[in-house]
Amino acid sequence: MSDADAVSKLSEDWPARAAETVVGYVDTVRKATTGKALLASRFLVYGLVLLLFAPILLVLLLILLVRGLTSAFAWAPFFSFESGEVWPAYMLLGFIFFVVGAFLWRKKGR
Image 1: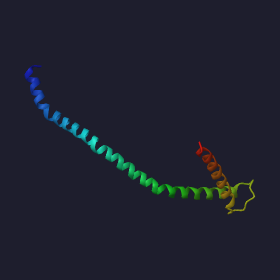
Image 2: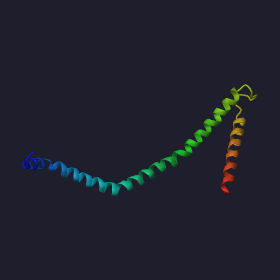
Image 3: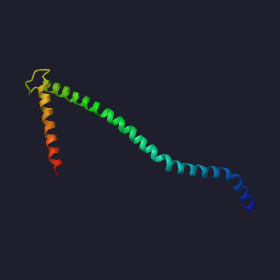
Image 4: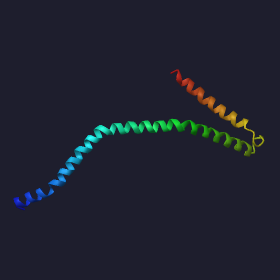
């Protein structure tokens, strides 16, 4: 390959290389300026959505637990509860919440 061929090949390829260089600089500037702002705004939006839906999901989970335990106590042959009695489910969940709360309260002091 002669020098003339090399020069003509470089002269034909320079627009693509110049475009790649400009795109690279633009991407670098964009990451440095708007990348952190996009991350912060996504964190804020997803955090707000979580704060709005978490209590709703917690209430629905508790309803599901009470209904499921009520059905399980009515179905189980070794319990003598009538169908529809809710107090055994409330008592079991209350005991579980009490134990978890007592454990967390003990860890609070440390």
